[in-house]
Amino acid sequence: MPRLLLDCEKMKYANTGLYEFCKQLGYALLKNKAANEEMVFYMPKHLQGFFGEAGTYIKKNSLHKYWMPDFKPDVWHTTFQSTRYIPQAGKTPMVLTIHDLNCIHEKQAPAKVKAILQSVQKNIDRADHIVTISQFVMNDVKTHLNLKNKATSVVYNGGHLEAFPDFDAPAYRPARPFLFSLGGVNAKKNFHVLPALLVGNDYELIIAGPIFDEHYKQQIQMKALELGVADRVKIPGAISYPDKYWYLRHCEGFLFPSIAEGFGIPVIEAMTMGKPCFLSTKTSLPEVGGPLSYYFLDFEPDNMQAVFRNGMLDYRQKHPADAIKAYAARFSYDNMAKGYLEIYRSLY
Image 1 (cartoon, one colour):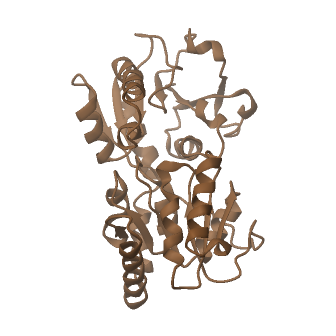
Image 2 (cartoon, rainbow, N blue to C red):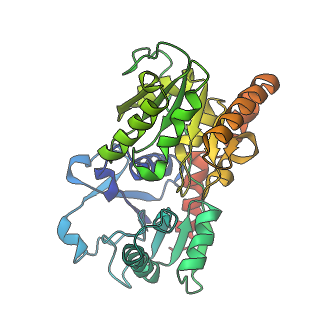
Image 3 (cartoon, helix red, strand yellow):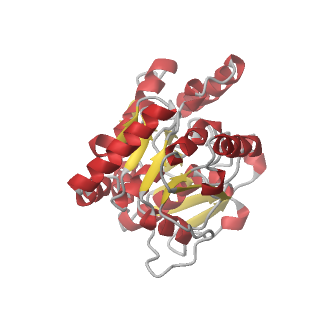
């Protein structure tokens, strides 16, 4: 029986893209694997049994960064590009997923960029098959790293939105029509440009997600204060799955001005609800948002306001919600799992 190991070590950080990636891929692999394939989950102690009795579990130990026992899987899927938790060289075929090289696009210090690229290169050297989550990331990898003629694939993330149709108790209930944005609150998400979209209208703006940078949260609030819209900008922090469903279901539009994304799962989640999405043109977002989204070509307030006004008018005139939902359906977790299973099977 082939044993397929999925590294879920990064699920120790809840409310993050890596947590969601591992969670949804794990469930989808269990659903789509062959009857003779065994799923093994390498997970933190407190998450043992997370995927139910259909899976087998191996407990992560911090000492494994220095020496990984031979757990004898037939394929080991490493889900974070810079991890130190990898199988011993030569012991197990390894699939490596590279989510992004955002350090380059965030213009981090050269020494930090060099260290990050070196850690990713080390794992590329160990891997047998390299996967990226968008063609944009693959192009970045080919430009900045050495794939050494190894097998490569692009496997898009899924974007299924868990539904809670009877839920009606959000953490914060807007008093008026509102716009919604979602993601970890830090500088790369570029949220501070969004309060400008409230000038000249009566919308509220909700920016939800874990607060990774308190100083940046204050920067958003100061920008809202400067524009005279501070009473209509809410930053509730991390929210529950029912909250996320409620906000995406009821918002007038979804905003995602990020400057560095390997994929951007929240975009697909919003499109699943047929919502108009207003995105930056940076990194992978045009590839993911496709032709049915609206794009901020720059972040000058007047230009952003024009894109938003024209986009909302276009949405109301053309009624593209069904087409947006159909587009989003192509980015399913089942399709993602099937893509990875095909790669696993090429290695055992």
